[in-house]
Amino acid sequence: MEAFVILFQLGVPVALLAFTYVIGSSIEKRHYADVLAREKATARFPVLNLKRLPEGWDASDGELVVANVVISVDYFKRFLAGLRGLVGGRVTSYEPLIDRARREAVLRAKEYAIARGFDGLVNLRLETTSLAKANSRQDLAGLEILAYATAVKLR
Amino acid sequence: MRFSPRAPPDDQNVNVTPVHPLREFAVLWLGLSGVALAIFLLLTLGVELAVSRIPPALEAKVFGGILSEVPKFSAEAELDPQRLERARELLDRLAGHWPEAPYRFRLGVIPGDEPNAMAVPGGAVLVTAALLEGAETENELAFVLGHELGHFRNRDHLRRMGRGFVLALMLSVLSGGLVEPSAPALLQLVDQLAGRTLDRSQELEADRFGLTLVAAEYGHVAGSRRFFEKLEETRGSSRVEAWLSTHPATASRLEELERFAGEQGLSAIGEPAPLP
Amino acid sequence: MILSNIEGVPGKRVIEAYGVVTGSTVRAKHIGRDFMAGLKNIVGGELKGYTELLGEARQEAVDRMVSEAQRLGANAVINVRFGTSSVAQGAAELFAYGTAVRVE
Image 1 (cartoon, rainbow over the protein chains, first blue to last red):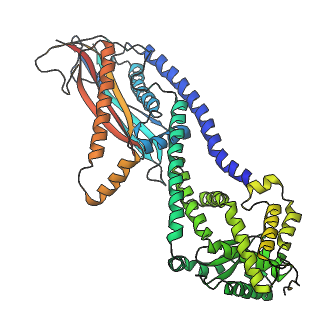
Image 2 (tube, rainbow over the protein chains, first blue to last red; image 1 turned 90 degrees about the horizontal axis):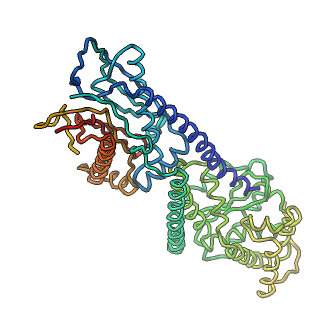
């Protein structure tokens, strides 16, 4: 009987890992496909992180555009990061997450500007904030990526 | 400055390391487990060395406080006070036959449906209420108490605690730090596992000491095997159970005891004393 | 690859701009550094282990950004900015971004 209790206690985390891995990776695949499609669609829309405008650009209007994304980390990724925290090195499980989030934030800013008839984004800036859970100092509740730029209308 | 939008080709994402997460998981986990196992073995060795060096006087000082904690979760109230008194007195009598005993032993009762007994650092012998209630003769109880005294003699209780601590640390590390080392569920699990690692021969050694104490007290060892016979009746010692449980299979224990008794010339003839 | 964090490269002319490039990395320190840092936090002073670690990570982020710029055919990245945040206990995320351009 005791053996079953122990197996159960070990089996739950393993099952959780397997489950969240499967679900997490499917969500990730879908999001990446979505991000790539939208990037292709908006590829012609200029985004620069410079303040000065390219030649031939005669800006008549400018407006601050702010877009953000908050992402959460699934159990499997967090577990891998925990193991990495012992060994050190690149936390490869977080890389695709942050990459997706950043591209998503920039896309949102782009799409916002496009929807309002602007012609380009200049002086793009990116910020990341990590949100801690209320009850624990070190547990991550989510990661916020902020993308802001000035959208310009050209004559 | 002209602006001509360009996008890098899709084939490669420079910000993501092209490693499959499952592979990363396997490598990290197996690697860490290997390291953990090595450290565990080293620490277990360390525990063995330490146990033989900790003087009982120090142990009594450090853990003596536990004895006063026992009444808090004790189930004494439900027991027949006469029986409890006799049990306490019995423990003292048995300890009397071990003059070099470095502890002051005390009996504590904990709730439990199955008859069980434990040796706790500091000199406390904990028995479940079921054990006291189910004992038919004094000799039977004497054997169980003597067995626990045998564990104290071999410092087995310290080993168990030391290994438990090491295991808790290892498991906490292996879980990637997700499980706190002090989580009660972990401590329970770890205590069970540590109990299993105790050598079968340590249990048999404790059996032998228990038998010698009983013989010294009563002049014979009749009635002590009754405990095992009851165990066999209720559980029917199957091989699988024996492997899983902390104690070696009852049948082999009985055999060993009879062989030992024969060797030592301990008489099995005598009238077992009744309990109140 | 020329890098600068002003809007151009001194002494050169910016001919063409291709877009924003980013490089990011997430690095964790190993448990040994953690332990040393814990000790250092008692006595104070520079945490050399961490300085090293974050320096390496930042270099990696820059390298990634540069390789993306190369794939665009740029020969310089201007207006480079850095960002950092902590994403897990003992792990930091670093990113660098700038505009990939061709200068001459």
